[in-house]
Length: 210
Image (cartoon, rainbow, N blue to C red; front, side, top):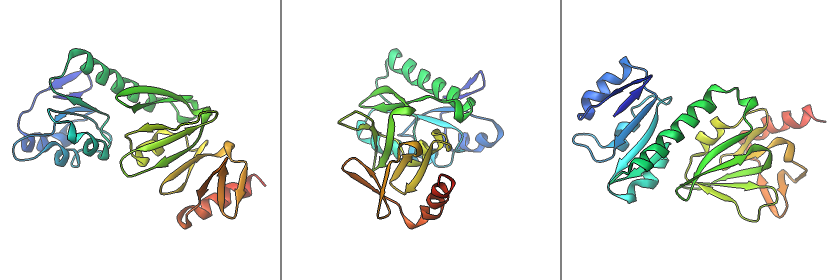
């Protein structure tokens, strides 16, 4: 199922669908992982980065692979109408966020343990990227929120005026930085490294506030 504007389209042949994609502005794809000729994971890598994908499959072992390619959601067959609506609503929320100026965004929704969790940006200290998921650390919270989401997708979602990448595995909220110790940002007992790739941008940030 291909959803674009207010139109929907079915296409059972992935190679034919790939040929048609450049001709249409496609917002959302409901994409089966197991397809003839070309599987859904391979198909998704050929899709424009502005198109969001919801994977559907009968096998839950594909879930992590789906999130590695920035899938918006993952539906396990047989798909209930409630599950479909939740995925559709998540897509609507995603596109509504994209339409807002990033500076006006006060909260984001992330998927955690098969639930959508709303997180207030003002509470985020930093975000740590691991192999297949993120850890989102909040103020006054003993445990981080775990989410199957890539660092790239998270960085694109957050307003750059408030958050900055300091390492391939870390994003920090600028106004939460209180202590810098020997080139590391300190949050309580945790030390966040600043990699060489981001040192210049971080130093410029410090110079603006010194």
